[in-house]
Image 1 (cartoon, rainbow, N blue to C red):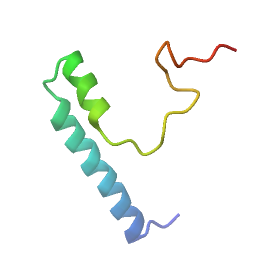
Image 2 (cartoon, one colour; image 1 turned 135 degrees about the vertical axis):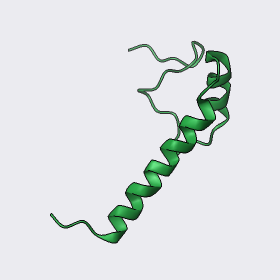
Image 3 (tube, one colour; image 1 turned 180 degrees about the vertical axis):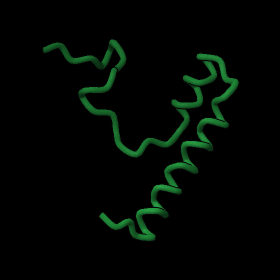
Length: 60
């Protein structure tokens, strides 16, 4: 399989994102990390499989 420039570019972008996140959270405590992740913009809304608050939980 031949790799194109676009695929390399995407892979490089993903590596850059990974490196930035690693640098951002490197010395954070659990509480700081939790707050940091809550403030980040999500790419998708919460779904059923994600953990919800007790108030919003659905029992099956």
